Structures are given as C-alpha cells and as structure tokens.
Amino acid sequence: MQYVATFHTHLSAMLTCQALQDHAVDARMSPVPRALSSSCGTCVRYEAADPCRGLLDADLEAVYEEQNGSYRLLFSGDSH
Image: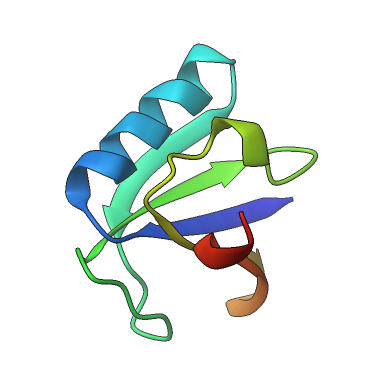
C-alpha cells in the first residue's frame, strides 16, 4: 500500500522519514500533494503493508492511503 503522512512541522516529517527508513520501509520526503493540506508543506510518502502508526512522529497531522491519484484519510494526529 502507498501512504502519505502529513505533519505540522518539517522536523516531524524528517524524524518520521528516518524512523521508517531505519525499519526498512521505503520512505521519502516530498511536497504535500495539492489535494491535501499541511501546516509545513512537507509530507512523507511510503510503501508498507500497514500504516506503521508506531513509527510516526507525535506531531502528525494525518495519514492517507494513496490509490490511483486519489487519497483516503485513514487517521488524523488527534486519533494517533
């Protein structure tokens, strides 16, 4: 599955990307897609069997499942 995680700060995006990569998850930082909003403008795109909730920084805004160019909200940071 393809996921997009958005964050309130750039630092949180960097910490999450590193944590995912440290656990052998294919992850990279990129600009937030126009269809989504984010406070910092940086997201982490990653591919994994599940959303990897335990590896996401506490300053998470939201996680979306990406499929064929569309996004489905899975959870927000408030429910993390």
